[in-house]
Image (cartoon, rainbow, N blue to C red; front, top):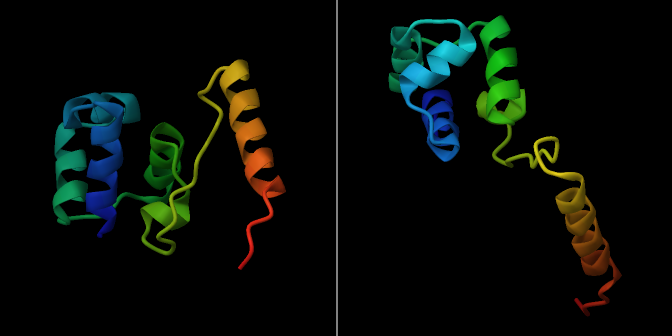
Length: 97
């Protein structure tokens, strides 16, 4: 998957159009279209903005790492507590190898 494909995927997951992402970035829609189609790549400044808006790491966005990072910042406090409890319960399971 290319950087452009990853931008498009995460944008779709947010339910945003190219125009909406461009507006949030302070850019025109052509920039987003060019990134997603592979015509160009975002600048370092725009990669930082994209990572924040799309809740991904730069390594993921730039295809240096295939793992998606789960950011909990946008979740409610209750949801964060529940997720942490689930993760702790999974850690406590002793599943034989």
